[in-house]
Image (cartoon, rainbow, N blue to C red; front, side, top):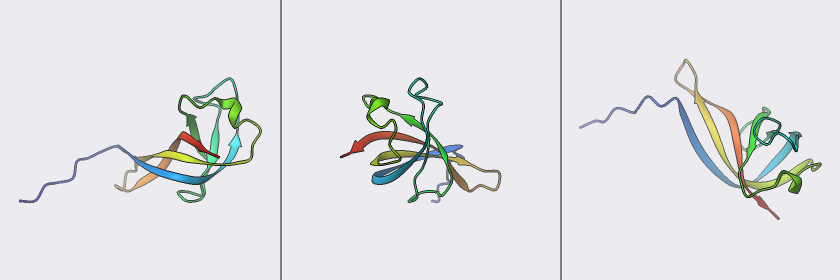
Length: 93
């Protein structure tokens, strides 16, 4: 028997130890004030949320970091998925 794929509006993928280019930084708005480019997943700037227990001060004023992320992909009208946001889950030293 064949099972049809669920019509999922959003999917998430995890990536470990990726380069992150920080493009927008705001210590006061952890949910809306950050944006980054992760070359491994997209050349476009994406909104970035910082997951606790990471403190924004740990990465503020840096241009590049390495870390673990969760990528959120939104379903487009044509059925394909496009990166829409990243969640910074862990900073790599």
